[in-house]
Amino acid sequence: MTDLPPKPTPRAPRVSLWAYMRLFRRDILSAQPQRLYRAWMAEFRTLFFRSYMINDPALIARVLRDAPDLFPKSNRIREGLAPLLGNSVFVTNGDEWKRQRRIIDPAFEGGRLRDTFPAMLAAGQAAVARMGAGAAQGEVEIEAVTSHLAADVIFRTLFSIPIEDATAWAVFSEFKAYQRSQPLLNLAAFIPLPQWLPNSIRRAHRRETLTSAQKIRALITQLTLARADDISAGRAPNDLATKIMTTADPVTGKRFAPDEMVDQVAIFFLAGHETSASALAWGLYLLALYPDIQNQVAAECAALGDAPTFSDLSKLRVTRDVFRETLRLYPPVPMMVRQNVQQETFRERVVKRGAQVVISPWHLHRHERLWANPDAFDPARWSREETKASQQGAYIPFSAGPRVCTGAGFAMAEGVLLLALLARAFVFTPLPNRPPVPVAHLTVRGRDGIWLDVRPRG
Figure 1 (cartoon, rainbow, N blue to C red):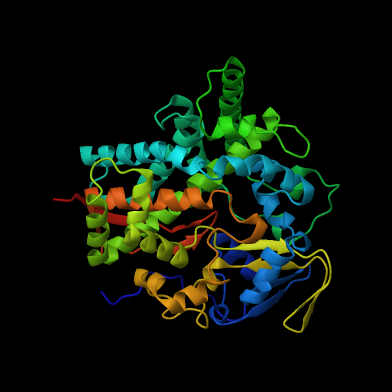
Figure 2 (figure 1 turned 30 degrees about the horizontal axis):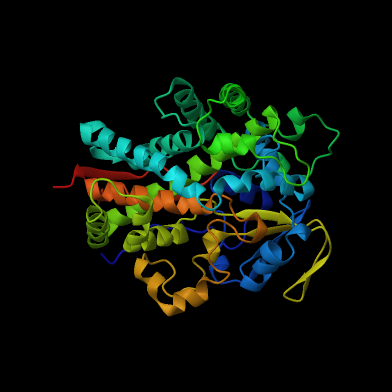
């Protein structure tokens, strides 16, 4: 197949602010002009703020790695996610963020990933069994399948319960309602309204968004309080929730309070479920487009037998390269927004204090000056020396520097394992009349879903 994987059509070079706002609210990706796939930096001006998108790896290294304290996360994105995420590690900055990471990071370090592997495997095997029973065969909207599977992984690894648990299923169901009602940006993302205005005015959230967020947080509170009781009684399982809730900050000696843990679980579900579901769905679509590569992945997994172990992940070399390439072409988080706290000079241009600094993995990973055949699906590129050179600073699906996603290793293991298990069990074929159109809201998804023909592998 010579056709390239789908990519959004960029907007016209010049549009009004209000037209841009409408486009951005509908989809981040098609709201951007074509020139961003070649530009090292672009400036966007409004009456209320200036925004600078940077694709220069040296500038990205300064913002994310070298001086992250000078470029905290922008509060404009925080406004949109506040109802669900509260004061979680995803939106905090400074000393508060550092304290939260000191407590969270140990749960994802060293041997902990090995400890979570059996739960990941069980979720993957359960998905294969569901699909094998006919629940997802024929013409299938594959994002629904991967969303179900990713949620199962989260609940099994975090709270040692399957998705079929009543509370887990209620969270999953309510989260789907939250996704439908929640735009990435609201009015506060464009216009810095005064802090003394009530949140109901300043944040301007939809009623449905607030209701869904409240329900999700109430359900997570139930799980968190129940786990606290189990920890006190000495009967808590050795999973991620227990590890995080029993870890004390080495600086202050304090643990997360119950309401703080609710914030963190909310972001684990948002990040761990939403991003994994997106990446897995696009990975299956790419395998469907390229059946020869799909067959290689299937054979690679079949060679492991029916009970793969954590150490077997290292043998899934083709699958790992497929997943890397999926994250390059369809990074789940397409843009990251920072705000500079002091005046900077970017590429001989003065960037005043308080400007938005946008880093777009979507454009960076497809940049015409950084990647050979940037829009092509080419898993073999990851074994070539030129890719290893270009990857430095130009491949950041999990961000980079101190704020790199704490679950990056978890996500890589999960994605490789689940792609392999599904490709071994089923044949995925694209539907010619239903090609997906990538759009970005919370993550990169198909505008009308991602539809595939799914059949058991003979």
